[in-house]
Picture (tube, one colour):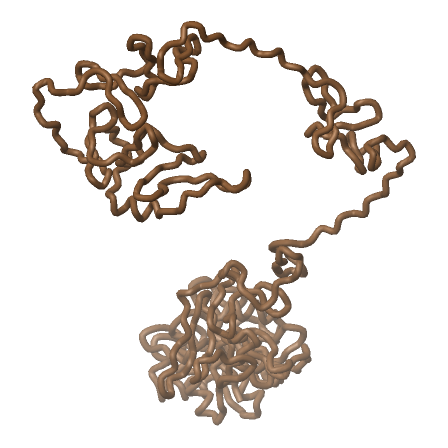
Length: 551
């Protein structure tokens, strides 16, 4: 057997070849049988073109000359054995013979065969006056041997048989009607795609009627005749329906095959379009059951946080954005949670006006009290100019440094305390810090943030640490002076830090009082620049930030 031949057990055969009734074809439109078909107790196999398989394998089953599936027999010229179920028996052995094979003429049913000395059927050969065909059967009533000889009903060669001389083909010419259609022939060939007089013959050879022909240049009427006076109507431009994804008004929308806008549904179970037809991004959709990322694609990995008892529902999602979930698992929208505002998409707002524009949240998303919506002007605090290197106190030593070397913090605070109504010298403030804390000139030059806020409290003032630029602006706009520890830039050299006092606000600028440099003090500076130059030294930030609002 061929190695690539499909081998099937009889049980598989029964499933694959469900018996169907064999009936005569009722019409030319009936479908031809294909595959295994059972008729009575006999199986047949029909090829894909509907022909009955004969003298051939169908899987592990042999079809005989009559098309029947063979059982319990040696087949295919005696090379293979099929069992009682018709399936090929792989290891079947022929019984030893002592030259007992049949020889000569053998009848099977109504057909005769001739077996040679080995018991094999002779094919495509003469045995006496009898012709054996390709299937081994003795031919009857037919022309054989390449059509050279005729055998009669008894299979015997008829020496006197004469072939009829075929009549010469009569070629069709001119107009020919077939059914209700007309055709035109030239030398037996149907004419196509050309004129025959005033009649047009189409691509199938049929005479055209009631249509524009010859590339739409001419019109033929119901009788097929060319109508010289026919006028073509100007076709209206086809209305092209929108289909698929389109970008409209900076948003992606999706049109169905009928041209309608898709709304409130999944597109390909991947992208969600809302009630306006717009593709949603970075949000919960479909009744908050699924999350779509910044590209609009569903992200099944993101699950809602399950709130247990009184646990807060803050959840940080892709991109670092914060959201808040209520105890029922729903996403909080358009509301405050503490000092944080959640927008219509549930995302915690930052650096914007919220709650109908009534409140401002900074870059950390926290509400900034008293933040002025308008860019209002606030005058700077009137305070004296003190210099840490003044001859009156510049050489006074505190620990490892003198006032001239390290007195920027107490000198700055002395200026602001005077502006707030107290008569204070820089050495008074320095004494207060040095004598009561370990935050000035201990282990290094300078005063820490803790030392600065100690002095502020000691002189009877409140303070608040500023952590965002918006908080800085809000403090300045409200009239509060700001103690500022700044790094390298306008006021400090590379590698160092320095303390100045900020007050007043006008068009994004504030006035700085510098206790060490006559060229930089008393001038207005861009707040963005000063904020970007805030000190990053841990010694200046040990209170949570380098800037402090006073009062």
